[in-house]
Image (tube, rainbow, N blue to C red; front, side):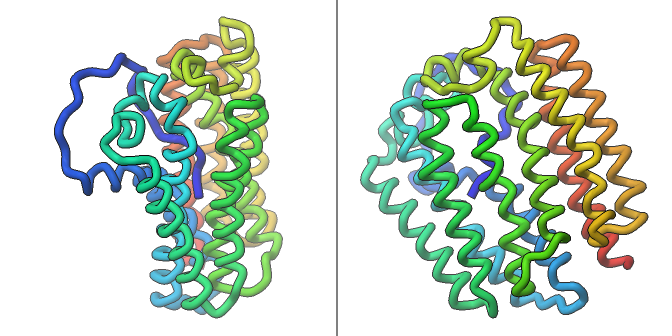
Length: 308
């Protein structure tokens, strides 16, 4: 499972001396905890909104544990698949696999075990099969489709947004059997949100992605990043009406709408500035703004549900 990339805030720099560290820290790094935490926030939001007044703590804890294991396993498998490109990029060369601190077969077994355990946990502890199926689909799309596509086509960002948008569906399916328009509205927000988010990341690390052979838009287009700026602006603009979908679908009410729409416009203004002046600083502003937007929207949806 993924929101499909790291959340870097530092510009790439050449690798320095290798530091000694605990083996447990290396395995923890393989799980990409920051990505997993963000995904689990959206899983929890999906469960809360899908429970529709029939909330159970056991259900929430079970879906978070199962989805967390799937996310951790998928991330470890992503490390395993990308160990070659990671060795060529400054910001990833010190990861456990390219640095040699974890052996590739061990990482593969670690990832498969976590992934399988997560899917099994969801299947055995939740009343509906949808959560385990959605989690399995999320992990497989991330590992088997999105990850190899990164070295084939710039469309990898759009394809990768699909598994990145499925976590709230996992939470929703843990709470009820039917996927409704309300759940689809959550998926739509996550899907569109990821595009400007990852275009900003790709622009910040375009030289490093080029070293790793990643076909990100800023790597293959004009050196000044014109089309990356345009794509960031266009998708951030699309996010404004998409942000209103939960209100239209009656999953969010006036509290949500009055809080979320200004957030979407605020984020759009950051994208406008990046499109006009394409620098690492303005790209970083888009990245940070995207995290504030998503956190704010999830909190507003949860608060609206509790108040309503």
